[in-house]
Length: 201
Image (cartoon, rainbow, N blue to C red; front, side, top):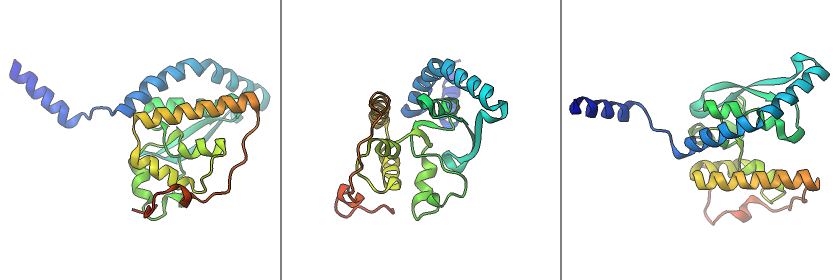
């Protein structure tokens, strides 16, 4: 009996991949956020259906995910209270998106065809938010979002994800309460990279 158990565990280890720490974070935090925000998303969808008609509630767009797989991204047609992003949480729970990652691109997007881009983009899940999106909202200086996304893809982990999520929440709250955004400084991305850094591997 013990031998059978050992063989079963060995089979599982070889053929059933263990979820990464980031995937565990996506499942636990993503599910909690989905349950907490579902009433607000449902209310937003109902309001849109009443105002615009049932056919104008959701946007459906093809996006490229992990490993180059294409999926249909459903997004609520509103920016109020960031309900558009929150409406994408089911994709996080299903594993099509991550909480943090590069922006999901349409199939055939030119940004994925740049030298060195295709490989790293296929190695990580696209995310609800990411370093490029956070920097864009905060006004922090960086001229090349693709380099930020590539840097994330090469160094991503739970600690970095939590830091980006905390910054995203902070910026959303600041914008909600103050309504103003700082002016973006005009500095080149080369000012933020170590000597010899190249965006192409």
